[in-house]
Length: 559
Image (cartoon, rainbow, N blue to C red; front, side, top):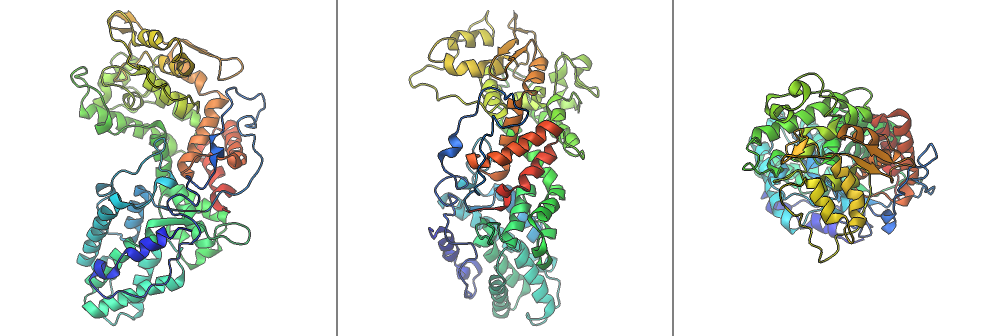
């Protein structure tokens, strides 16, 4: 293996971090034999190019997902070592240092590169751009600990070997390393605390030094999916850590400690899925899958649309979050509710969007002729509009790739992609004129129908029947989603038809797999993906689909 992770650990000078004596440290508990930045072979998640397989364009006649997921091999995926996501770093710090007001690591680190808006393992590392700001975050937390040591260790000032100190400080170390580090390594960190306490004679300074040392340790920063038992299953400490982060993006008390070693993979998964953090992560999955932009990321011209305000942007996101929380908090989370419910969560800031709707969006349900599920809510539409037009192509590309998992080639070099302006034609008509012939037509025959289906919505998500005085046309006909094709006269009918297809369902389970596993799917993942698809198709239950993934061999076995 490349020694990058171990070298990173050794490069962190405890003396410079803490101003005290550097303790003797054993070799890192994170396994040697894999590259921490690439999962072992230079590719996300430790895979080969087999994830570049094409996805069939027609729905299967079979009642299960065999056509979409034909693979039958069940070879385990490669072992990985990768950094915690920024969400996981925040959650772990809050877990280790309860009672302290900590700033988010997001305020210090640059944004990690994303793959289709998801955190992928091969992008999660510490590099030259992130090392110094990360150290600043760690130092700030250490100062907070130093100023309030009794929030962590509320013991009388007795010799540091006393049971109270040993128990409290050892608990901090175990929580920081999520119960996955060897006892000998935990002992080394406790010895470091003892040395600091003796040298400095101050509990706060000793705890601050320990805290900063812990925060820059690879055992805190990184997740290891590397050490296996004789059956190829992750050893107990790594298994519990993996289940906790996979399901809930945070360490979980019930999965840390001596007794937790007895938990099986299935039991650990059940405990993780039952944690409130699992619901929060599921909500974030939907937000990231749908690419709901933060208000500051929405690119709507306030000159062209004076109705667009910061309050409207925030209100739209708040409405979408309330909608998701309502359905995701149910014992059975139905995907059909998310994409087909008309339940309304009105707020004053979004009222301008619903002026043309029956009830103006202020009732308990949306206008049945205009709205259906999350895809017709302002947050979704605003997130891919603007700055001047609704941007039908952008809506179409998103729906094609993230909702249907259809792919096209890159835009041919030298092609002018500018859509002609001019009154007297709708955006759809201008796009049809631009993309109706080669070389554009080969890709846009897939892209355009998904965008045209939403032409009744302007850039703010308001219902319209005309654009600059010209009637809009939302009618679409597609022959590549199923044997009978899809024909729709309105956005509501299009969404109803699109989200009923098996292609939509297989894409949803792919998106969930990619988000939770932090990598693209491989051919050897087909059996798990097929099981997820079959669960979704037969039960329409998102939580059961997630449980199928978290309890699968893909989650707890490596090679």
